[in-house]
Length: 248
Image (cartoon, rainbow, N blue to C red):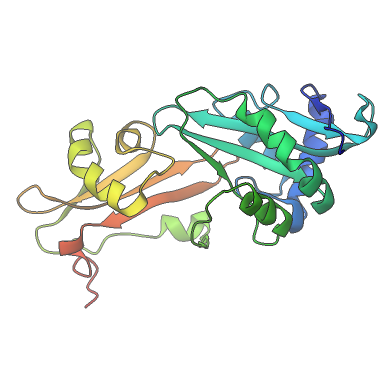
């Protein structure tokens, strides 16, 4: 019979960060939520809604408090989209395979009853995490790529003098837009990590408005705690597609 690993709940901040950074700098052990820069990783973790050290769960060699950290993870969640995001599992492939199920069970016991979706996301090279997720019944989404531009490049972007199309206005999203934006956001992104209401309150969101006030599309972004800006969501209503940028 395989002995159940002892799950540790407390680890010194410095030791935990050093373990996370080492894993994040190895694609085969890194997750997709955090980068590889030590200061950026710390800023991102500190910016989570839930204190990351409070959610920390780890397995150490020999089950000892002074043993080497073999595998670990933490968790954040948001009740409005009813989603939780597991940060980790960090560790060598054999440690993730061996201790991952117990660590994820320990994470699950932290979650409120109203959380209905749990997301686990790793680097493409993190095949151990992918295998574990498959074994535990996670559903894989399609692969996406992050397209990166420098802040200097972004600062030079501008709308054409005539606007994106005749009669179309680009403006900041306001709360009244939520009811109009929600069907498009749900159709394009499903159970996303932000609701349409959150796009109005917690994101930098702009909408494209037609001559009669119809919502033609939107783009939403955030400035992360590590100083990186992300375009999180963008979509165009089906009737307006290929009409607002001169593309035919």
